[in-house]
Image 1 (cartoon, helix red, strand yellow):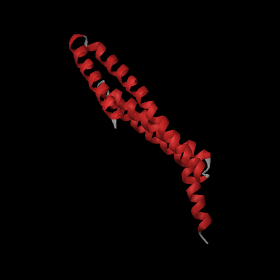
Image 2: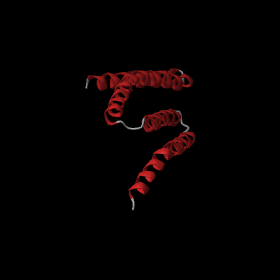
Image 3: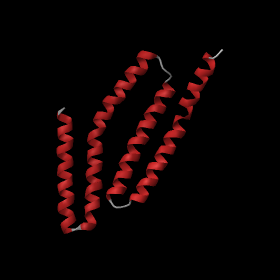
Length: 129
């Protein structure tokens, strides 16, 4: 619970810094925002390590195919990176580029999910008489 307070506090400090810099040097405000976002992202990586630990435990406990697990992790990673990148573009006033990044991320996720969809179809066909 205290982790979210630290993240929110850091985010608010970054926001204030961007506002202050924007008033004096508007051309540097975006760089401060991007640097702050990267700093927040590195702080969040610790939380992601815990999530990966849980996924690893589930994988070991259920004897699921590790290839499917890796695909799921890639899908989650693409989703987060896409959202992060699109938000940076949108914050800098490039909403058209942000929407293209989101579209590309959705397509990449769909392509990554094809082996999972194929596995599900094979299971369903195997069950049918």
